[in-house]
Length: 467
Image (cartoon, rainbow, N blue to C red):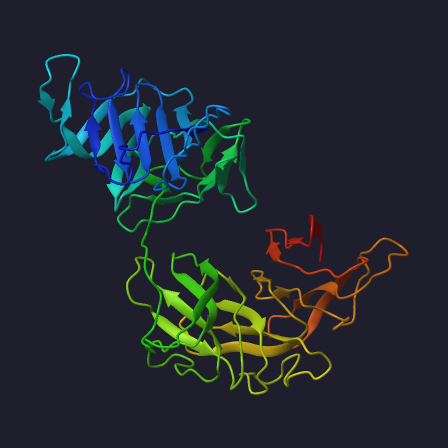
């Protein structure tokens, strides 16, 4: 929706607290939260959210043309949506941690007195459901929501999101909300038992209606200790750079997370990052090197930073992380001395193609390579199954022998074809190789393995291939 906001409307600052409505907002709104261009209004039966996107905010308004009157150009785009909870109990608000308020409001139509509404750090909806509280808090300017589940209760949290043209759960389990404003993604909630060690619980989103979703708990969840479900949180935000202050270049091409919420980053760099003794390689070798960086779950300094490359150019395009933190990377290399282990599929850089990639596995602590091999063709995607078997999709002029023809009978290819291969767990042999043929060239930009070891790839329209 588009709105023409007054020029003096300041949406770039906000209280970043939960302010009680004492006449400064419309009737029915009980509490209000604002941080920058984001706002949330709490009513007795729903929560209304607003995000503003400025459009040439500082540009002068167009001069009126009496001969061709036109509506004023919107200065902001607003996305407004609301969340209501299905079969919930009447909202009972409880405020926590009072804050000093220096923002005053004048009731012009009454006595003109300035009112300083009460404001608080946290807002709780008690017994949203029987035994379930919803706690809203400000986390570095982000509205954070926790569902607190008391021991012994049976959570059945179901909510409807109105205000978007499309709502769905994607293949990764995230909620995707789309409108002409753009797209919002709410990732899988982080959930854990309150047993002193925060034992993770596999809580998922399930779509139960066109715009309705439920939090789905495991069948064996008995809730002896109580639990916390955190569907929206920000662990940390940081800049990412090294020690070289001139002629630096660092690109991030892929990020992954392990079962312990450690983050892993790969890309290419010319920068100098501090190394950690005992890790594989801490020295920049070529003009551009690929890298692997491990960040702890709470942010802060990297656990380690590893360079991957020879004396020429090496890019890290994609990575796959298994639960224990082992990582498998792929990308492009022009180095004849890229680090390679013995007994692998391609121990030397192939000369049969101008495009050469690699697959490199690195142990979770960064101490050593699991294996590393060259790969014919140009590869942007990778995934790995629970057996440590890597799936990659190099493209080129038939770089490897096809083990199974999955194309329609008589299908004729043209140009470079999309190849999908599965390596064994040591990187020494190809277990399967298929090829997708089209009249032009086919390039793969996404590949994901599901729990049945099928993989979904994107090559123009998405398709599912079984290996």
